[in-house]
Length: 113
Image (cartoon, rainbow, N blue to C red; front, side, top):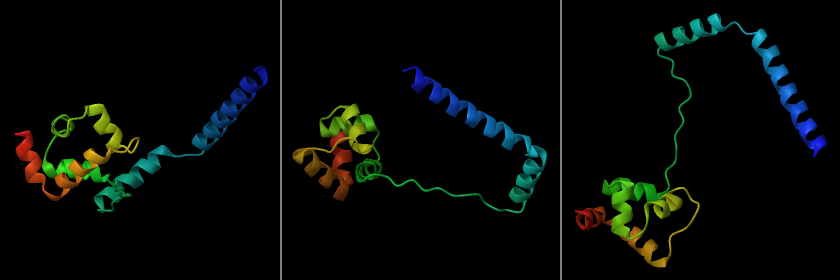
């Protein structure tokens, strides 16, 4: 136990030391000025796109909140969140309802209404 804690502390200390050395060599003012120049020139930074699960896409297409969508499907919000985040998979019946919701979002909106 003692050896594990010591090794962990050594790693943290080494990392902190490396960060301090790196930061000591940086010119933050110059970096900020360069960033402002890039923004003024219209240069865009990295664009990250997040892919949505088919369940999230279906819910958004239906225009429903998680609570509304969960109620229509007859599941808890927590279960819906687990499906949306890929922690769990819907059962056969729920999967069928999701397929209907994906192809006919108006039916789900009507059921929620």
